[in-house]
Image (cartoon, rainbow, N blue to C red; front, side):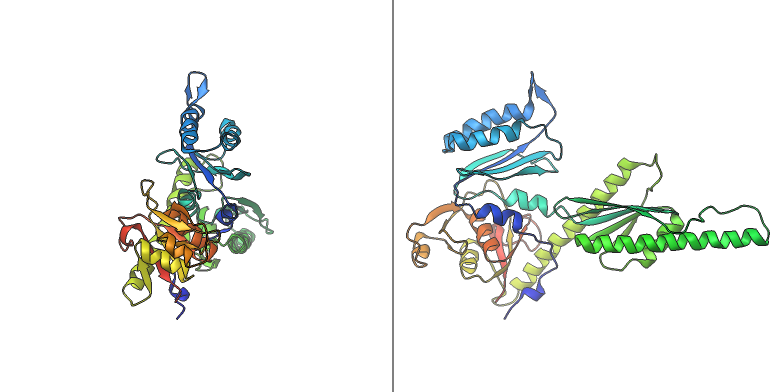
Length: 372
């Protein structure tokens, strides 16, 4: 029986890591916190890289691989607080920046790349739409799950927006036209926000601005994805820092809710016969059979457990004998979590990085909900 339908609706785009895993390796993986601080005349991150570089060389990383990272570290960081790079003897397979600083720098030369921290960061990047609304229209910003920003200026087609204070019959007509214009502009804004949400597959819509206009926008927007009203607005001089903080909290709530949903799905499946597995051996066996729909991993940096792999993603086993049974003549060892992530991506499973101490977390930090 196929159990995919029981899974929560998790946004999962494996293309970024799949491209990296297409390389044969071995891999140098770098997570380096970037910082504007200096040590003498040198940036602190550049100074730390020199020490980490020596450690990677001691692990066996070739000089040409290390040299490929040097210019990435030397660049002034402009779009994040952590440099992430994956380099093979063939060149740079991935480079970019994560928005948040890592807890500890990590530089590893190994059979497979360390993709867990990247996946953990990406699952915090919730696609969302922000609409700052007033009586004339809105500033709309859509952010994809990968962090790409799409901006739209909505200018209402109805230009009677200023209410009059005096009385009289003609003034009441103008008053009514004004209120009609507000509502029509707000309706036009809502339609554009909904279109942007569909475009980026938004998980949440955040609306702020003038009270009457936002109420019309909220009424017209669909129930899915969820819509939240925030403090703040379109006018210059608003509290942008406060609004930005609230946006981060709201999108963080969505990411946390999706992780809880994944854990709950695993907890529910684990209570039914043959719906889930946990622990290294059973999870590896299920991945090798292509049975995994959702892989849950606690990517503890200190977890040094190993598995055996072959050239293809599903060729993963707990022992060399497991690989020999698959026809793999020269099995290689790799870190267990990295081997499981590779197998999951290669067999079309969803991967979710979860805290090991969370409710319903799998035994010993690894488990899966099964397809069949």
